[in-house]
Amino acid sequence: MSRREEDSSGRSDTSYEEPDLYEVLGKYYDVWYEDQVEDTQFYLRLAEQVGGPVLECMCGTGRTLVPFAEKGYEIWGFDRSHSMLDRLTAKMELYDEEVQARVSVHHADMRTFRCPRRFKLIVVPFNAFLHLLEREGQEAALRNVAEHLEEGGRFVMSVFNPRLDRPEELVRHRGTRTMLNGEIISKFEAQTFDRQRRRTTVHYFLDISRQDREMRRVTACFTIRYLAHQEVLELMAASGLEVVATYGDWHGGPFTEESDIMVFVAKRAHAP
Ligand SMILES: C[S@@+](CC[C@H](N)C(=O)[O-])C[C@H]1O[C@@H](n2cnc3c(N)ncnc32)[C@H](O)[C@@H]1O
Image 1: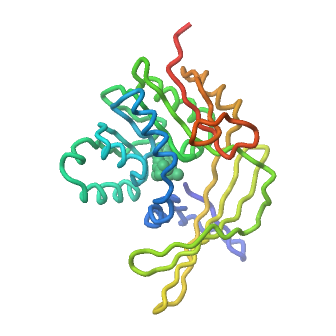
Image 2: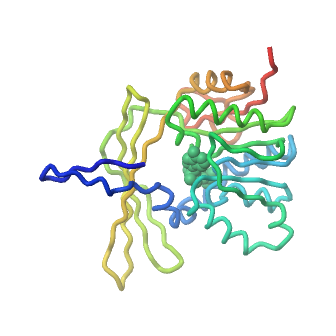
Image 3: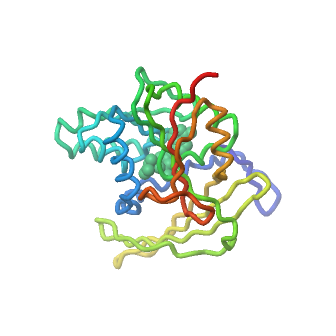
């Protein structure tokens, strides 16, 4: 994404290319989310019912993909971030050949991906779908999912339930983690909402310190398109998918307006 920058003297600098969030923060992703396993366990339980092969769209570093392979499922994954995929590939080298052989990873975009096969289970975990900002791209992505889903298969997508009562522009400390190299990372986050365009912009500030070095700060900013429950039902229907259940937690609890998350389970809709 290019952005025309203007400095304080009014001159413009067109050379600035805004980096992808995951190219900037990819190396901190796993240390941050490695203890988040509830969603993966939910997907694995569903796989026990519907079987494989499995496709994880926007698979990132393989936080969810790798456990599928460990459990014996053939799993395909794709992502548009080379940085995230490089981390996944490096991680896979630590597994034995049998596990590695079940994994097939590709560089692709959610709106245009093509696989030479269909899947029993397709998942888009952890708000990844919200990176698609426009309706056209959202529908293209879901139509693509429907085309790659086997008859009787299931598609699962999880996104946060937008709670617009959150304070805006307030910097919140989101926790502190220690990397293997001794770096201590404190993550701060500030959020703003564009209610008209139904988007939220998040600013991350990572303070990285170590006793023997000066502290440095890494910043990143990204905008996502939040989705309301009804909107997702409509999007799915318009794209050839039918939602068969919406959960509000990872234990099969029903979705309510107070739920923090929305977990949609869908199947291919029958042609009229
Ligand atoms: C929140 S991460 C989720 C990663 C992984 N699924 C997980 O649950 O840990 C979102 C991922 O979506 C990827 N992504 C964003 N837009 C994409 C697109 N249009 N096509 C493919 N991948 C995309 C990012 O590169 C990133 O790896």
